[in-house]
Length: 515
Image 1: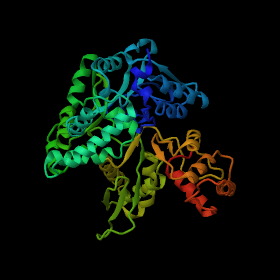
Image 2: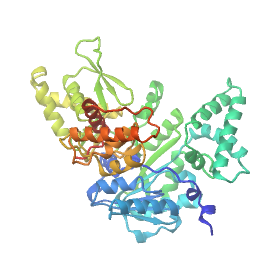
Image 3: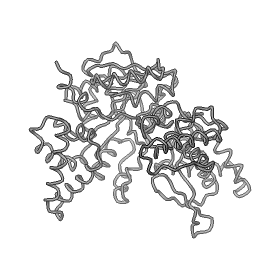
C-alpha cells in the first residue's frame, strides 16, 4: 500500500519544534504544586505519541542525558528525519519508532511523562480512546499525561470558516491545490457576508487569521474533515474509565484566562475543590479554543488551591523590567512584564525582588537565595521584624505568581546569562542557526533569529572565540558575502565591536547561552 495515499503527514510535512508547555520540568512543577512527587528530569522516562520529526523530544534529550525518551509517529518520513537528526547529534538516550498509536503496547515499558500534542482532535475516535487507554496502561504511579486538543466553545467560531473551506474543496485531493482553493474560498465568502452581522464579523475575523497560517498547518489543522473540538468535561469523562483524573492545565496558574471582573466574581464563587467546574465555566466565559490538559492517576489525593502553597521549594523567574517613567505616587514603581502587563509596586522588598529577577532573566533564582539577597538590600528601609517583612515579600510574590506574571520551577533552567570570555551557545541552536532562522532555546521554546548575520553569529559561539575573534569572523563573512555577487541588500559592509557586544547580550536574553 502506498503510504503517501494513506498518511497525509508523509505527503505534507507538519512543522516540528519545541513546545515549552510540554517540557517535563514544567509539568513536574505543576504536579508538585498539587502534592505529587513527580520524577526528576535527570532520570525520567518520556513517551511522545505523534512526535513528528523529533523537534520536541530531541532538545529534551540533549539537556537531560540521563533520561530515556521514546517517540512514536505514523509518518515514516518524519521518523526518518528524527532518527537522522538524533544520530547526527550523537544521542543515545532517545529512540524513534514508525508505529501506529493503535499498535503501541506495554512492551515499551512505563513512563513518567506521556506527551500527546496536536493529535487528539485530529484522529478518529478509536485512536482517541487508545491514547487515553495508553495513559492508563503506561503511566507510572506518579506519572503525568499531557494532551492538547481544540476546545469548545471557542472552536465553534473557527468551524464557521472550516465549513466554507471543506465544502469548497470537497472534490480536490492534491494537498497544495486544496490549500489554495480553501484560501480563495474563505476570502471570497467572507468578503461577501454582511459585516454588520455576527456571522459576517466572525467569518471575516477568521479569514484574517487564516492569512497568517502557513500552508502546511492550514492543510492539517483546518482541512482535515475528521477534526473536531471537545469540551473539557468530554475529555475527562472519556479518561475516567482508564483510572485517570484531571490534574490541571499546562498554563497553570492561568488567572482565569484574563477574565474580566464580573467573570472573575462568578469563577471565585466556585470552590477550589471543584476544578472541573471552574475550568469549564471559564471556557464558557472566554470562549477558549485550545486546551493543554494534564491528567494523572485517579487514586492520587491532589491538593487544590493555594492554602498549602509555599515558594521555598522553587526557583523563580520573571520576564520583567522596571518602567523608565516613575509612578506619580510616592514610593511606587511600575514594572512591565513580558505580556505588556503593567504592575504598580510599593513594597520595598517586592521592588527589589523584581529588579533581581529582571537582572537574572531568562534564568531563575532559587527562592531562598532571592529572599536573602532582597532582605539584605532593603534591610535599612523596612521594619525591624525581619520574619514579618519576609512573609510580606512572600505574600507579594505569591500574588504575582497567581496573576500569571511569575514562573516557578522545581529545577533551574540549564542556561547562563553571564557572557564569558569565550561564549558558548547551545549545540542545538548552533546547528539550527546554520539551516534556518528558527532555533530552540534553553527554555525549550522556538525562537526566531533576525537575519543571516545573527544566524552566523550564533553558529560561531562554540566556546573557542573571544569577542575580537567573533568580530573578525563576522567581518570575514560580510566581506565574502559582498564579494560573492549574491543579493546582499540589507547586509552591512562591516560590523563593529559594539555590535558584537549587542549580539552577545541579545543571545543571552534569548536563552541560548549554555551554562
